[in-house]
Length: 152
Length: 152
Image 1 (tube, rainbow over the protein chains, first blue to last red):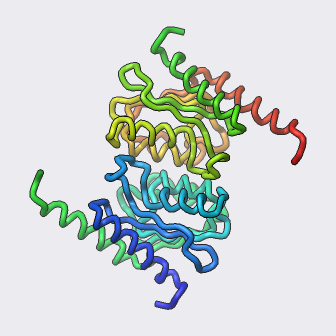
Image 2 (cartoon, rainbow over the protein chains, first blue to last red):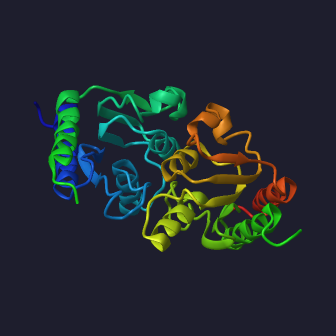
Image 3 (cartoon, helix red, strand yellow):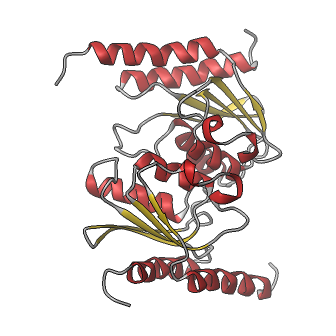
């Protein structure tokens, strides 16, 4: 893995997913990169915030807008461990982000289930399958652990 | 217009749209109602926050989750002045909201342009066209005024 490769930044997104895992959140993470620098990070916080919009991508986007003081991300790439859902794909559309690179596919809730690439901005490049196995495994491990926890 | 009718609550959403207008934001407003009580309100704040995710619906949803301390809205109705975009429809899906009632159609960015009702939760009822003319007119007025403002 070379520095600044897609795998390098996906590893950073996986660290965010790990942060979510440690908090009892479904482990999904995202980072946003401009000019080889990470300008924003986010991980799923739907449980702690009791807010179904608090997906890793939305948190990372809002953080990026705050950091830049701007609401478009034409020069940015988002790395996210799981295929974005329809909501997050819709948010990424509005951001006009340059590239979205995701890890594992989400056969149940990913944007592809009910839509297709056309819900992204026409200028947004989509790349999938980067470290897919690791991105998927952390979620499987999380749910396996959840199932084995004593019922409250 | 009777109290607690769809038109009554859409008027409240229009008041939120008016609040957006007065701040120079595209005038779109939303309210969330449970048991005939408004529990949350929101209006578009994408300019002031420089955040493309700050749509009326998202702000109202997050406000409702905070108010209830819960992340599902199975007993709630959202009234929103404009047809939700894909992002907002995706957020409403996750909320499992009971009903979405919108005013004007959005032929350019509404969820219907690129998807269909199936992106909503199967238990969510969708009603359209409530006070559509007023909901549309406020947006037309806003852009007309914008076009007539002296260029900065």
